[in-house]
Amino acid sequence: MNQAIQFPDREEWDEQHQAICFPALVNGFQVMCGISREIIASRSGGDNKELWLEFFRMNRWDLEEEAEALIAAGEDDDQGWVWLS
Image (cartoon, rainbow, N blue to C red; front, side, top):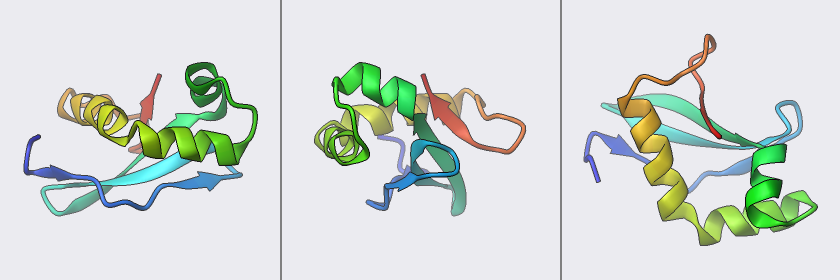
């Protein structure tokens, strides 16, 4: 793992974005990452936010690695968010 990118264990369900949102610290600056309801549902097979959060926690390392690659590639949206797809 790139030590310049760290992921605190602070994932949460965000009703406004309809996504699991989680921060990344990139060289000391916070970048928000997310995985939408549709994507997490298709990956997990779950149908509610509790199951999606459980799936996220069980697969944290892989999802954070995916987010890390997107951050490194500069794949953020116009709001500065990184979205897993």
